[in-house]
Image 1 (cartoon, rainbow, N blue to C red):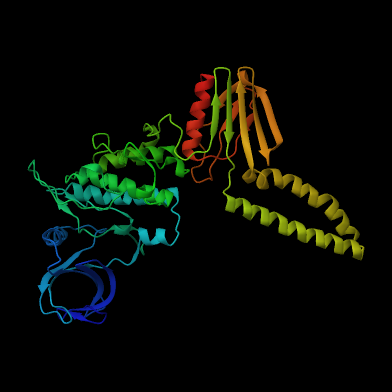
Image 2 (cartoon, rainbow, N blue to C red; image 1 turned 180 degrees about the vertical axis):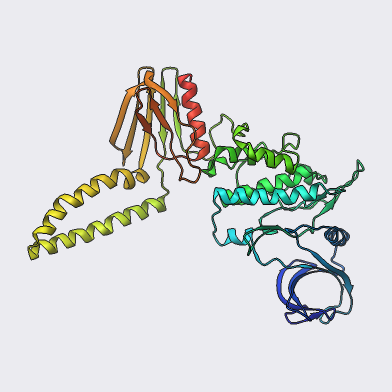
Length: 443
């Protein structure tokens, strides 16, 4: 049994175990003659070890030795050690440079939310690494890109680690390879024992979906083997389309190289969407449509927990102000009297319709060939409505102006410049609903 403080090969002192499975262990260690930190990956030559494990371990060492990229761990050493104290097995040992930082999986587990700009930055940095790997001779395929194998370094740069599933892409047709990878991030062709550069792009796309949604891709719904993620995010539609092109289940439909992926990213607004005319998965929008009428009911914006938060946040200050008002009246404070009579009610009248009511209310849209109407309903009672002629509609907004903003609704603009905006929706719901309305109006 390996323990912290133990010395390996008279050169490396073990510090902390970073990972372990049946026959592998990964340790953070220091060189005895310096303060340099390294990572030791050890594979036990035990009866439980499969031959494929040894083959992959040797391949990792051989490939890593020939790689030279600032965002990939550097090869240090590879050796076999026998008669290791506390162990009855021989061990294969791979030594590589240590990259201080945290994996993206660790950050996700800590509850970190990755913004749209952060995800885009991560995507381009990984693609730059893949351009290098895929253009080597022969090409090198990582085959296991996922959040736990991506380190956000202390320098705020992303590093690709753990080449335990790496493959030198053989040219000979008909050669089969060991099936490796992690469920949810692995494309169909890799499960079949074949991998191409586009297979790494799929894993990258699945990783980006995890970062955008906060949910592992295996736990998201799918349709026709395609990960259905768009209605779980509110980001620029171009980014959704681009990630969709990376995660096409059919490799023939997928972006095929890292260079092409970078070029497509720069022109992502021109990509066709991976969005069907079907209602987005999980959407609670209700539509009744006929040739003469179109009725749409939008769900409440906030979750139950959010609405409870709003309710508590509204009631507590309100009750406190009542107590203060009574206190001031008893003490005969005339200024306080006028403050509570005029200023506070004006504030409430302004704030409640804009901030407090929307999370509790529903929005309903009604169209016929003569008129259309938007109605806001709270607890079953209509508290606001706007009505206009259907013929005056000239524009339906399909995209928010700033991707960093919170989810936005759809905006209907009239010829006279008047605008009607619904409660916020997710990006995919917004685009789907606009298409539904435009189709009914025959825009």
